[in-house]
Amino acid sequence: MIEMMGVLAIMGVITVGAIAAISTAMNAQKRNEVNDEVLQMVTQVRQIFSEFDDFSNINNATIFDVIGMSNKNPYGGTYQISVDPSNTRQFIVAINGLTQTDCESLVARAWQGSVGYVMSGRTAGGATGSCDNSNGQNVVYITYGE
Image (cartoon, rainbow, N blue to C red; front, side):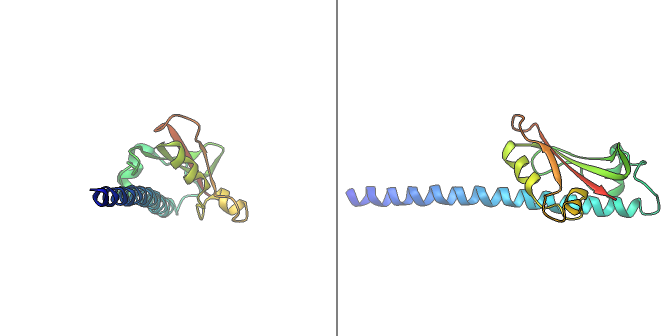
């Protein structure tokens, strides 16, 4: 009976470790999926607007149909693409519906090709965000363009 209790205790510890590892792997997969989707969006938007001098014609209501993607992100929120109001030669990708931890992780990530990443000499992540809201209410902004 004591041996059986020992085996069950060991199995319990192994199970807890496995659950933590699976959870970490799932979070990493979501972050990688967001990264891939943002890069795909940026490539498509740049290609569509390559013949224009700016991104002032971006219409968030139709841009996802034009680029052939869904505006839903893996966290249950949405993506939004809009022109930067202070510089029409730049556009902003917003990632909505994030938990505080995911928001902080995406802000710290190196968003290659983003204005903030390039301007910092590749030392800053390139994203900004408001990560102090309740879970599901946080937003990350990444600016692309010139």
